[in-house]
Image (cartoon, rainbow over all chains, first blue to last red; front, side, top):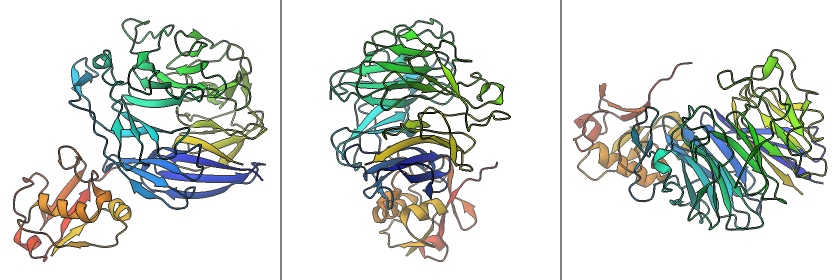
Length: 371
Length: 98
């Protein structure tokens, strides 16, 4: 019997929810690391019991955690993230140069082939990697040292590297996204990088079509088609069919094209999900209705998914790391809210159930399918 | 014997209860006792002092003998009462509202 394990990071700890393949009854374990911000937890795709967690605090900084038994027990891993060489500066909010300063790990992306290898996206934006199961971390400095790096600037939430996508067909290809620098691609395992922002248009920067400076909120791809990327930007839902070389807008009939997460159905590469948010100053759903929107044709044509979601007086947000899918035959879709609810759908989004109601504000959701 | 009181989150992280007692090689300074603390509990590295510059993390305070020692030089000798073990060295997380 297959099982599903949902890893939920919140402002005050991590939680692990488990269910059988029916996904009707859920057990909740946690909080793990109570009182700490758990920006992200993710499992290795080659060893489902190897989990990594980013544990951070404004008081105590960054701690990394690792589990070898599916989250039953945890051990602290290495937490030193040292930028390579003399870090230099990026642009500060007021336009002045500001030294690169490590603040926290936003995203963990375990290798597709080695449970001891994990990429970490951090704030201030940089990409790190461990190859020894988290004991030590080293920077893939070619990204931060890109010729545009000194121009990168933080968004209101900080200058974070929040998305890492590994191409399952090409082990040397990595996509990342930074708020507010944009998306980048490496074709040599992270040594060198190129911005992939052509076609993005951002009215909040002096040159709306600049090479960098775009506030990309999330990118997603289906593993069977790694050249097709979907992006939720700070306004606009975008699509690329050429590995990010160019983008076109696919916001279509969405009620608003602002939002944070974007996800792809596990079996239908053209089926994508977003959660429209009213605006960048009102971080809640339009009309107080929490609606996931699904496109079955890769964007442009969207349908609202509302069955089981609150359709009045709902003013929560869904953050960029807080949506995921499972790999069961009937694709499960999951997301968490800033109001502490975790919603799950076992039927590709047609109907939803709250599987947790009263968690702290949810920062991240990941799903493991245990076959 | 130096006595150190950790904030709750760091006690959990270090898997200790109550005060931590440490044998520290003189001179007894903030630096030497924190070096000894991190030597015994490596998981605390980076949580009290920045990894790189070894500065106190901004939202932590160091108190002892009813004095705020946070802004003392890390190489200044600690009060006699801390060195003798009569008084603990307190590592305090600043309060937050909400």
